[in-house]
Image (tube, rainbow, N blue to C red; front, top):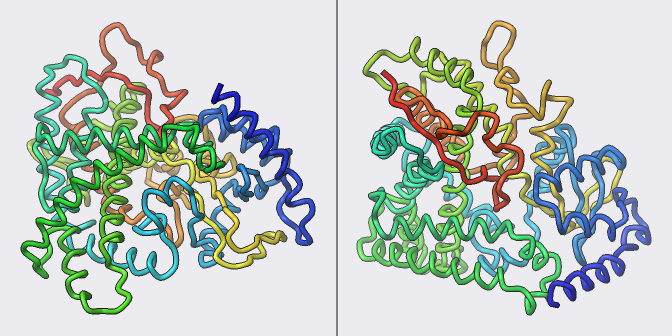
Amino acid sequence: ASIGLLCALLLLGAFYFSTGSKNSPFKLPPDPPPLHILTKLGVLNVSQAHSLLMRLAEKYGPVFTLHFGSQKAVVLTGYEAVKEALVNFTDEFVDRPPIPIFEQIQHGNGVFFSNGELWRTTRRFTVSSMRNLGMGKKLIEERIFEELHLLMETVKSFKGEPFSLKTFNAAPTNITFLMLFGERFDYKDPTFLTLLRLIDEVMVLLGSPFLHFFNFYPFLGLFLKPHKILLKKIEDVRVILRNYIQISRQDINENSLSYIDALVFKQHQETNKKGSLFHDENIIASVLDLVMAGTETTATTLQWAILLMMKYPEIQKKVQAEIGTVVQLGSWATYEDRKNMPFTNAVIHEVQRFITLLPHVPRCTSVDTHFRGYFLPKGITVIPSLTSVLLDQTQWETPHEFNPYHFLDADGKFVKKEAFLPFSTGRRNCIGESLAKMELFLFFVGLLQTFTFQPPPGITESDLDLAVPQTTFTLRPQPQAACAVLRE
């Protein structure tokens, strides 16, 4: 009954707001019939929704309007439009819109969903702190090696028997935790396992269709449960984070060993400063942002990378052969070695392009903006579709196929591609990009140097499921198993 009422309210809302842009004295981007679009978007998974957006782009052009509940959103598709907005209009498209669920979680604080001076100050501080803690430097490379060897011991313990792809989540997650908390966790540590479980459950809930309905129509919260369950799980994470913050406050030290230490010391420095932005709510929101975004993305990409090597064994063999020519027997590849490993580097880039991990994170205009002949009023939601860039047929020869040669020239040399934007671009690009790139390279190369990954017995390469990803906040592979055969 509640679902029927929900659908009726959705359709009523869509009809009520269907004439918005047509009565505007300014020229807004074209908008498809909202009743038709909302009904479709509400029942499709993310990958299907992307296909719908691409069909709309073919009909209405790369810039068009959609109605989401009482809100209009301008969708940007394709490399040219997205790059122009995020690079040439970086100040105009720099803000985040007020998304109801994130408003309830963060209340405008943190690194990712804040705006204005609070965002600028918090982001600048976060980037500086992460660099001081070794992000992108030799120091963190050594810690990634330590984590790699522990991950390999875990994989060896299965002795060639099938194990879950989720096993690969622990190592990249631990690198993020090392930077946030100043220490890694044992893989069986109860706090570590609790955080892994909560992150997983939160990401699944963030992909729930009912949560999207809540964001479109917050007043329907009375009829919906997912956002309430989500807020409870977020609070469980906060309890753990507050404990670490409290421990850090017991020994405030300018020689920070973690991001939490750096935040606590900064707050201590500004104790008597009027209007300090390093208040308790912003501190815990900033750590929470990095706990969620800094773990899920790299861990899920590593899962995809192993799955794709099982799916395409000839590519896996070619990567292993290249590793053998560059890395001496008994040694491990360093991040610097990627320059001498063009095929391997191309494979890692193609994994990130092909999986379109994070379809889009919305922006909104910070001022009234004229873009490509259209008027976008201040505060309107803008959706730059990163998926449409990573699958843009004008930029990639075979956009819907896994093809490492997208990143290689005729001589087999690695080629940078402007349309490779999995970390977004402009002033809101991913804070942890350099760390993620280093982790992916070192974990991927180390694992393939040691193991050959195969489907479980009775399953062929063609049986491995790539077509319909699991829709969470990111696009995860469907739960599947792998077998790791120790190489000679």
